[in-house]
Image (cartoon, rainbow, N blue to C red; front, side):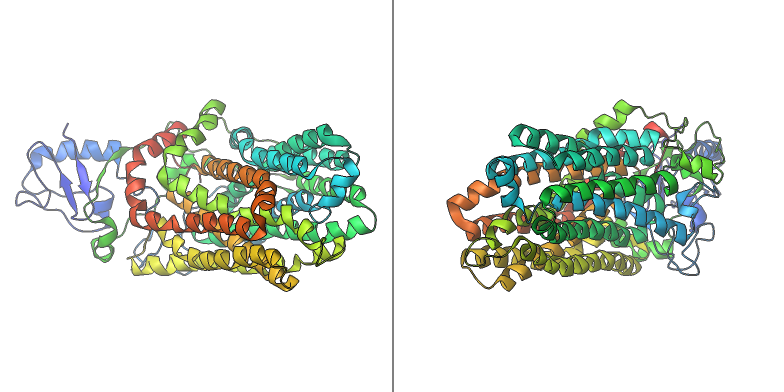
Length: 596
């Protein structure tokens, strides 16, 4: 049988065995959406009709042959077989199924409640991580652990936050998200009560290790849950809600931690953290519904067709010259799609779920993140994400010694209250995440309805400005003993960059390679852990050697360079996605198709 390729830019079907193009004088192709589905009408070459029919039955033109390039806007309202957002022209990606247990089909009220639960989880975990920040020097004196060793334990904790997800992610993809949420909450509940009574360096380090194992899931599994429930055009703002809640937990931890340290004592503050984790555990046991769903079984049934010739001409710049191969249909298990009805309350209470249709092994899930380090789009997004998260690290490790020492002489309570400025920055960062969705929709309309993941990166511009202002004000404000409001403004600007940049980097990585979200977030978490480990471990010696000003200048330059890495993504991002397409599709074929 002849091998055929489709050239989307010129609407041609190339045949190496003699017929150069269906648009040659010897044949006629009707330019219509049916062309996209492979139905070609030939007048003068009947000898190849049989071959074409067999080919069309066996193969499917994959609309995502360029990973991440998708039809987001139905510009001419011709995609009648695709679900849209209400009466609008926004195409739902992924297409929802008719199954009651499909999270995409849940009501908005149910989705928002589930989002509230995972946001509460993120807030509680981040709160527990940061309650000691304002009392850092006091904890050092009471436990006999030096500031260097405390920062070292904190750095070890940050390192585990990413790398332990190599274990949690396969577990979540095979046995469900709920099991991971419950297991990690139990671990953090235990470390909260343990931390209230620790003494010495050994106990401190052990507590940080166990806590890092438990806390790690909020760096990756929450993102998976959000991607399970929401469509592509919603993910930027939903991710920003999660990151807002995470940063809110940090802020509340630093504010209330200082107050609790001055009143009931920092040890009792950890008992309170333990009680909060107990509440989260109960909420997840009785009201969280599993969001894992075997979407790969439906991939072949829910693909929205690509744009017509007229639409394609509008988007010619995006697709010109790209020849995309026909790929075998592998999206359905044995050609049968099972029905997955709405769960009963008893089924909701189950701590785990297993879909036997998913043939991907634990080992395959485990090794994938390491291969993804060869994907330039993913690695670049990971560094943007990692350096975006440094604001919380440097402020957490330094705010206490800056404001409790002369000339400020703040109490622990007042030191924590300075972080109200971070709350303002948190809100601004959330707004940047919401804006990124609107920018993608607007640019897709201008591109003939075709969305490219790189469209989201333009919203990193305000993040760059906030980072430049924030690190300079925070570092040099402390160095020159400027008014404390200077330091507060610096913190707020840094947090604005953190929430915005982390939202955009995460959404971009997922937009590039839909279907392997779990593996992608692990790469982001691993990169973040390595960067945060290095910064947390080095910040104290750096300050002692160079002072706050030059320390924050150095960190700030690295952060700005990470944001500027978006420029090569905008220029070369699509080429890199095309280059990595074969490897990406191999990952998808392991489970039979798309999973999110």
